[in-house]
Length: 184
Ligand SMILES: Cc1cc2nc3c(=O)[nH]c(=O)nc-3n(C[C@H](O)[C@H](O)[C@H](O)COP(=O)(O)O)c2cc1C
Image (tube, rainbow, N blue to C red; front, side, top):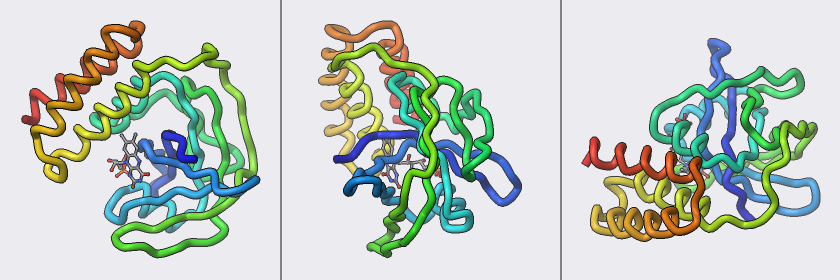
């Protein structure tokens, strides 16, 4: 299973970096992150071999860290080379144990060595959150996916967000649409 998370790493100058990343739960206690070369997350993780995996239910955090190079409110983790987002639901300390090189990306395989629960999200499944994440992923693949596919996904996501979303999901969807119209 892959969970969409926000990974925080620390650069050589000590600044925290935040980027959405899919984290794979491989087997009991073992997690992995597949990171494209060329990203700051890759450079930082390669050097420090440790990060904080932030689990978040507020989709605005994914949108802001993906599209705007936004630095959310955070606290440096004491036990990992990364930062805990104040608005995350949970923060997991991740330590790399091995790496697997792939074409243009590396799988970092490791263990969760610490866990902090920050808040408990509302229970239950909200379709609008998934719709926002799908829209965000297509927009970040501009130039890789045909524009028509991105426009289709934005339209489908908008319908679901209007039907099932709350204020957070509506705001997140608006940020994605604004980014798309400004960069189209
Ligand atoms: C929901 C979501 C999931 C993503 N998952 C990954 C991933 O698993 N691996 C990856 O390399 N990039 C992934 N990305 C893309 C990175 O977040 C994006 O390239 C980002 O700009 C990297 O930022 P950085 O240079 O600060 O590390 C994902 C993006 C989104 C929106």
